[in-house]
Amino acid sequence: MIHALKPYPAYKDSGIPWIGDVPEHWKQLPGRACFTEKKVPNIGLLEKTVLSLSYGQIVIKPPEKLHGLVPESFETYQIIEPNDIIIRSTDLQNDQNSLRFGFAKTKGIITSAYMCFQTQKLLIPEYGHLLLHTYDLMKIFYGRGSGLRQNLDWRDFKYLPCPVPPLSEQSAIVRYLDHIDRRIRHYILAKKKLIKLLEEQKQAIIHQAVTRGLDPNVKLKPSGIEWLGEIPEHWEVKPAKWYYREVDERSSTGSEELLSVSHITGVTPRSEKNITMFMAESYVGHKLCREGDLVINTMWAWMAALGIARQTGIVSPSYAVYRPIQKDAFLPQFIDLLLRIKPYVAEYVCRSTGIRSSRLRLYPEQFLSIPIIRPPIVEQQAILDKIYNATSELEHAIHAYNQGISLLREYRTRLIADVVTGKLDVREAAANLPEETDETEVLEDEFAGDEETAEEELESEPEEE
Image (cartoon, rainbow, N blue to C red):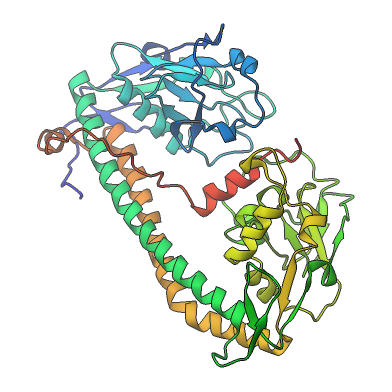
């Protein structure tokens, strides 16, 4: 995959610490010479294709994600064209992780809260986007914005130093980095498919253990639950309200540990996540949960966004917190696994209410009526031991593949920065690349399902309608 790239033969000092030396023949120009800002309002609803900026990609927003917006509101959106550069310029203070620059390949409309740039004639559009994307990866915009939440505006770009190679060299850089990016994305997607297979194997082991136990010859009985079928004869089946009650304690100080509730990691401290977006100014009035409480992200229960709290903390006021009635009914790890298996998640979907599939909510009265199966406590521990022993190698393999993905992404980030700032010369490598056929396939989103991006998505939903 990697070519033997070398530095340019001669360099000069750019005078900018975060750029360093640049090739001697490159120009250095202010942002105003490279970009112009544009804003074309969608007056008269000329365009109806709604776009969004998602993890650095400009994508068509599906109808179910429009969240009640009426057509008239789209007059306030702006029209964007292919080759426009879109910038999410808001809230630098709270969000230092997401990719803020996208490159439009489709005509449509997008929120006017974003900035829209076009490149001047001395930059090809793809290179202009790569340059700003590189600065985004280098995190040079943080601390530049104005206002309480540090929002960027044209003044922050007007004098932005921009290294500018000749147009032919820009084309070579774009071609080379596009080639490498395609290959890295294919590698990542291949690894993610393997991870998905391993996860499915792991979930099959968990499902069998928590619904049938460990004895293959155990006598079974009808559970009375159509979607679960038969269970061991000595197991108990009762509605969730026998085991849990809803509690609504509120924080008076907001100083407790802030917890996230995710379908991937359950209930965990938000400080352990690489997520800083959508932070509230105050957490006074947030819900308190205690160790052993079951917390459900009401809006995302249909994705199994729930778990058992391992410590006292605070969660969103819109989440549901349930406290055990019988302390010895379930081991926390067992009920955490049980309530995440596919039949239970499917039941959350059936019992949730909402006007759209993406806005379904599982309210307490609905959850507390769901039947829960319960093995004896000693058997729960034996089941947990079996699951951990049977899935440890799978977990190790999943971890190794995820590490490989992280290393590929780190390499790509470093390579982009080195090439766009002139540390590596790709002219010869780009000239020797094989001719690319037209890309007719649509590569899957390589970030889909990632822990960080998935949890950003969960946190991005408004807490109230």
